[in-house]
Image (cartoon, rainbow, N blue to C red):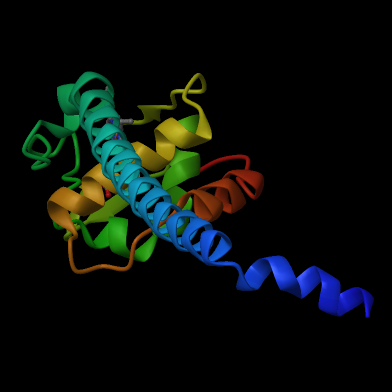
Length: 159
Ligand code: HEC
């Protein structure tokens, strides 16, 4: 009896019209929200790329050059580096803490130490790595922020 009473208003013509309008408006709102979300997402992605590029150009390019080729036997290349591919999980720590080991990159030995940049946040480090991957390692699997955080939590004393 109670339930039946509740159902009666749903059968009114005016209620049906109201429900129809609410439904179409709801779809409309959904669409608007969806597009806004996509725009924000696209905006964020290009913002990450822009920040990665700006940071690479200001913090790394003086040595590794803006084309990523490095400089002779002094600064190793970031583009097409076998070291990069083999030690990707160390890269966040190398950016933050530097590296002073003697390393071999594409068969060339490098001994000059690199200073770290401790002020960079994990997001900035992730954006630099993502910029480098986008430019020079498009086919490699991407290192995301959670992997960067994980790497930074396991940094060795010295690289
Ligand atoms: C002042 C010069 C200098 C700057 C600035 C610099 N590096 Fe380096 N980087 C070096 C040198 C020199 C080495 C080699 C270190 C060694 O032999 O132990 C190196 C090594 C590396 C390596 C490992 C080798 C390779 O080429 O794959 C990576 C990765 C790297 N740097 C990334 C970066 C990134 C990213 C930045 C910017 C956030 C940066 N470096 C800024 C000089 C620099």
